[in-house]
Amino acid sequence: MPQERLAEPDPDTDPDPLSAQFHDKLDADALMAALDEAQQTVRSYDTKAQIVGVGYIFALGVVMRSGDHIPVPMDHAALYVFAGWLVVILPIIMFALVLYPSRIDKFTRKRPAAGVAGTMYFDPRKFADVAAYTKAVLSADWAREVAYEIVTVSDIRDKKRIRFLRALYWTGGSFVALFLSQMLRAGGVLSE
Image (tube, rainbow, N blue to C red):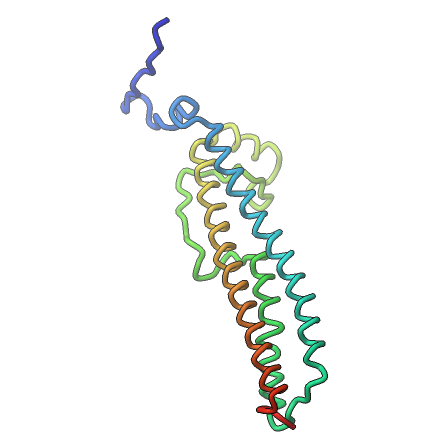
């Protein structure tokens, strides 16, 4: 049985051959799978940040209790408070930033949305009612819509990954700082 060949698009009659042959050339299922993978990765960073953040809080409690019996020198009390906030609170904030990324920061890339109607997710500020949204959905270039969404979600995924790793590194540094502080106090280097 001879295999059918796709007709070559005519740029004069078909202004957007990529969209016209979306299923034949790009395979819509493959694009949707790529979008799904990017969304799952974003959700996995949320889960990891929640688990590691809670684990950090519990581990911090154990470490802090073990150092409670070692006296803090009063002439260094302000330094201890400042360092305590850096060591204890900042990692928790950093894990929260993984969960709730802001839209505007130095890692966000501005992407031009030319030719994208934004129909992947309903935005009530953009579409006044169901009729307006239905009209936009029916006239949307779905190859472009899905591809734009993949790029957008991938940017969020990369931002969350960077923030998660940064929080992990800071957490490791926090435990090292706590260890050194307790060793200095236990060894009498820092005394009352």
